[in-house]
Amino acid sequence: MLLSSDNGATRTMTAPTAPNRQPVLFLPHGGGPCFFMDWPDTWDHMAAFLRSVSSQLPRRPDAIVVVSGHWETDVLTVTSSAHPPLIYDYNGFPPHTYELQYPAPGDPALAKTIAALLDTQGIDSRMDESRGFDHGVFIPFMLAFADANIPVIELSMYRDLDPARHLALGRALSSLRDSNILIVATGLTFHNLRQFMGRDPGSNAAAATFDTWLTDAVEAEPTERDAALTRWADAPGARICHPREDHLIPLMVAAGAAQQDRGTRIYSDIVMGKALSGYRFG
Image 1 (cartoon, rainbow, N blue to C red):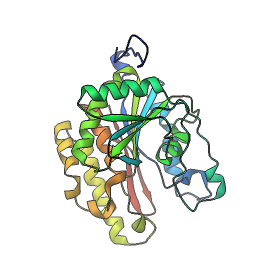
Image 2: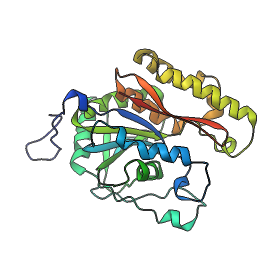
Image 3: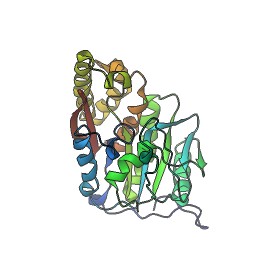
Image 4: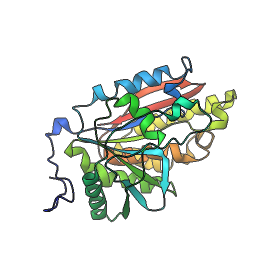
């Protein structure tokens, strides 16, 4: 059992056997609604990777808890709607991209369970019954979990984007994995929009250098990994790749939720000259 109450206010979950413990994923979510536009070749490799994600899991998750690079709050917030809407938080794209649908259910009971779990770890949180899924969730999930039949809960990031604080958040969530709940973080390992659209060879080199450093950090022994990720801003090319670290910090949540599981790079690509990676823990 994880957490439950006699009146059913929180969800009762039975832990599966160890071989079915869910891993933790850090997935690239692309650029805006990129997978659903006529953008020849640019995003094909990433789209193919995302379509393969569910087939690599030990079994179908009972629910997914996701942190994306597109939701920041002062107090950690958990979506608690039974039918979360979509937030089309991108601008200047074709009209049909604002009509995309991803009708995955929420899980209010699980949201309460998560809030209670965080409380036991000394983490304050609140639930939001109106907040829906931003495009850092529904765009990659339309490929990775296309049937939209697995309940999804989204958690915010702290607005301060402190890496140690987000590693601690991941550790607090880690036990969910033993109840067949998949923890997913989405973002991008390079997120400098000005340089993404440019042709500066210096930024391409910085992206490659940082990508190598980041992969070495993720694949290191867990204590070393967490220490390196806490100091990510000191890495070569770090601030060229992430002038603001909103799309990198979800990786810290994933690494924290991994606990003692080693990380592995499961996706590697060059998009518009920039090296990008995705990772799995466990």
